[in-house]
Image (cartoon, rainbow, N blue to C red; front, side, top):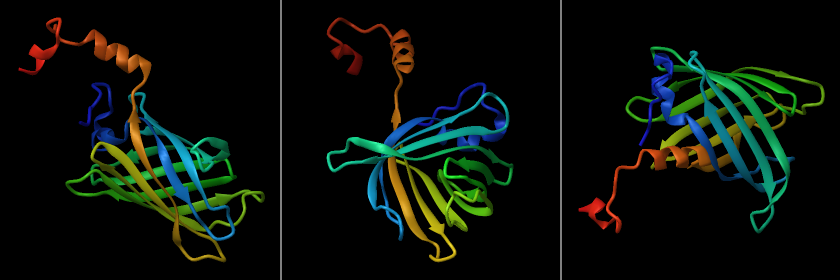
Length: 190
C-alpha cells in the first residue's frame, strides 16, 4: 500500500510510491566495465518542499552476496509538474552531473526518464547519456538503466529489484498504534 505523508507537498503526491528506504540487488553489465551483481540502498525523502531528495549507494557483491567494495553513489532531486512531467537533477561520485526529463505513466506508478544534459569531469570516463525506467510492482521498486558512450550505443547496463525497508523507528511506531488484541491474537483475525 502506498502511504501519502500529511506533510508531503501536494505536487509530489503522484511520486509518493517512491518515498522511503529501499534495498535489494541487481546486475551491472556494460562493455569495458566489470560485469557484476550489486547490492543497492536507495532513499527517497522529502522535507515539505516541492521535490524529493534521492540518494543511492551501490556496491559489488561476491558470489555469496557479500559486499566486496563500493560501486557507485548518486544523489539528486526529483520534481513533477501538474502534467505528470518528471525532472531529475542527479550527481554521481564518478564525476557526472545529469539532468533527466521524463513522464509518469497514466494509471500506473512507472516513470520513464531520459538524459537531457550531461556534464562530466575529466576523470569521469566516457558517458554521453542514458535512459531509466522506474516502476512500483507488487510493492517493490524496480528499475533498469541504459547508458551510451561515444564508443557504445545506448544499451541496458544496470537493473535492480528493491524492497521497502522498515526501520526500527517505523516498527516502534507500528507497535504504538496497534489495536488492543486478545492475549492469543487469534480473535484479531475473526
